Amino acid sequence: MLVFDNPGRKMFRGTLVTLLAFGVVALYRMVFHVSQTTVALTFIVLVLVVASRWQLVYSIYLSFLCALLYNFFFLPPFGTFTVADPQDWVALISFLGASLIVSRLAEREHSQGILSEQRREEVERLYEFSQQMLLQDDLSELARNVPRLIAKVFHLQSAALYVQGQKAAYYSNPRDEIVSMTELQLAASSSDATRSAMPGVRLVTLMLGLRSVGALAMREENYSDGMYVAIGGLVAIAVERASAVERFSRIEAARENERLRTALLDSVTHELRTPLTAIRAAATSLTSQSSLAEDERREMIAIVDEESARLDRLIGQAMEMAQLDSQGIKVNRKVQSVADVFEQVMEDSRPVLGDHTVAVEGVEAIPPLLFDRELVRRVIRHLIENAAKYSPPGTAIQVSARHEEDRLSVSVEDEGPGVDEAERPFIFDKFYRGRALRKRVQGTGMGLAIARAIVTAHGGAIELSSRPGQGTEFTFWIPVETAPVIEKSKAKSAEN
Image (cartoon, rainbow, N blue to C red; front, side, top):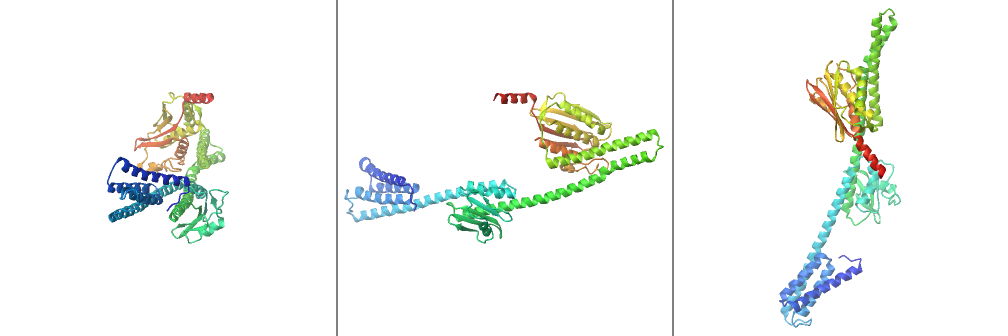
């Protein structure tokens, strides 16, 4: 039986049920004249309604009140509490018994409904808690945030968490250390799943199978033991998941470093050695053979100059890739002329274009846009140089640009052998080069990786379409704004 904390509410409900009972009497005595059976059924329905809405104490009180009123007003002799006919005693006792049974059953159903609602709320809170923890993969960040998350989701005053291997305990409220770190460490080594550390504080050992991963302390609220165990289980799973992600990340980082180291050594061995060998041979010929003809001397000097430029490009790409990996890409957007960018790209790419012809379309019609000039220039240059490198000499390279609403789209198409379907998922990876041409075409495999990193930093995308034996088309887009939109936005900001 539940006891009300609010005396005013208790008095109000008691008065209300009394008035309802007397209201039934007045209705059947003064308005409708019905049989004793109808009166008894009406009283039972009234008791059932009260029992289903409020606690058992009200329905029991109403049962006895209705029995007295039934006896006084509806059983002869009327107006007295005596019963003349023995059959009326049976009717009165049956009515009281039925009222009490109905009250008990209705109160039980009412309690079950309240309990079901509490369980539903608990499940919803557990689900919300699990969803919030899934958003955190870093173990240290998870350990710091879990106590505050528990206190917020489950409406607890405070919570504390200790994770095995950590050097500190974490609290939802730093000013309220409900238990010390020593107690949490002892709880983490305990075999009890849940126990009380002190009055009002629940300690839960975070068990994952037979292994403990930490301990959790919470100030107790009106939750069952199973609820505290469920919270601890979710935290244990989240801690183990974050630990597994952290271990996997370290393994993947080590594997990636090893792969990049191997690829870089291979690149250095095959790509950098070639220009160095040519430069050294030409320099040796110039210094050791003083009688070289002027034509031969100029040829040797041209070789030194060409291979030095090639070596400079290779080292520049390696430094560019290393810079992008270590510092990230900072996009500095300014209003730029797209035509000027393409003009500079063509000037920079002239040494590697050779006898390729490059046709640029759609550039002049594009208005000034907001983007990072230097980064976009690098992307276009890498794509044009890639097209020149992997297509036969003398073939044409088609470059087109178009401005569509809030994005700038650029395409570079060549007449090379195309990209094999099996190699497309790897074409933008660092140091990756096509198997068929890697021995015939010089390069490091970094250009497309740099282009994708820059485009992604702008919030855009890059893709390729290839026709085997007919060529490859690389297309990238980045979000941009036109100069009128920019000026209008600035004017609006100035007005505000």
